[in-house]
Image 1 (cartoon, rainbow, N blue to C red):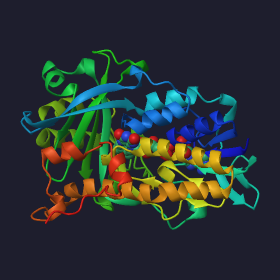
Image 2: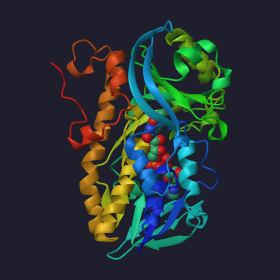
Image 3: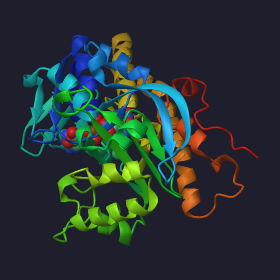
Image 4: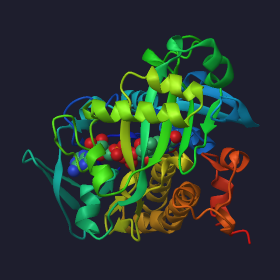
Length: 413
Ligand SMILES: Cc1cc2nc3c(=O)[nH]c(=O)nc-3n(C[C@H](O)[C@H](O)[C@H](O)COP(=O)(O)OP(=O)(O)OC[C@H]3O[C@@H](n4cnc5c(N)ncnc54)[C@H](O)[C@@H]3O)c2cc1C
């Protein structure tokens, strides 16, 4: 049994913490936030590997994991279908996964209000210091502390998030508020709408209290829109009182002016079903889209995982599945090689290029929107995409492509 510290108590950290605890280790998790993390996320597309990671974490999977969608549909601006494909998938929510993982992990090991501010290591152990003056020691430290990872900043300060040039408006709308037209033509599907240079997508998720009964569910949407890094993005990340949030605006701080403008633009650009969903979503929020591509994820007795290691744009729908995969990989190598730097090196050998491939695939999926918005679309081989290709490529299971090292198709000429 080894002493292992996990930094970050969101989905990635909880996967690692649960899996390593079940493997018999003495695990302590340090989470910066003092209050509840609930309500942070919206919808999450799942893949088979996510179910594997939940099982390894000791969580039994049943129908209540999420909602089964069987079909994808792309709607034109007039609301009519431009195309459909059959693609069964389970979609769930951040909150559902958080509760499953959090309730499975002992509270006395999940320490909140622990902002890790200093990390050091020697041949035998790692030590961390938190802003409240507390210190912790362990044989290994697994950091799943997100996009602005303090651990990554310590170990590899040159690896920084890079803004992708667009943002995502997100939100969830109660099923019971929607018209029959929207319920019949969109609600049960993984839906898309593709204005030039933009992309709207959505799918049903559980409602309050994880209720998946018809009438009680919600529709989760993500609307990708270009926003220039200087003026436009700064404006969007500034609240109605003029306060700027450079690292991300809290959902309830998004300015009502921006929400009103976004709703107005939706009326001009989107299918009426999506317009209705946006109109009836109480608190739409926005997130800038970033890439994080690490060149190194292991530093002696310290490993990065989850969004701290790689952020792939959400078009791949892989962030949580990737974190679950990485947690399983770390635990497998510790089981084989002990809580040693060699085990973490083996994790890096297995996962570094995988993470880089996922980032590259997500950039490839985002590129066509950017090409459209900069009028570069024309004959550029790999960028020509239509409703069918977008539906067939977005947020699908790419485990076989990754294993074959083929996550980004060769450009077509
Ligand atoms: C628009 C959008 C849509 C998405 N859709 C999907 C999807 O469909 N499917 C999917 O799988 N993924 C999706 N993702 C990605 C997914 O949300 C993340 O990849 C996933 O949640 C992994 O997060 P994480 O636990 O690594 O990091 P985070 O969730 O960012 O958690 C990091 C944690 O570390 C804590 N922390 C930070 N600094 C410190 C510190 N110094 N000390 C202690 N604790 C600290 C934070 O408080 C936080 O709790 C989407 C993301 C976006 C933006």
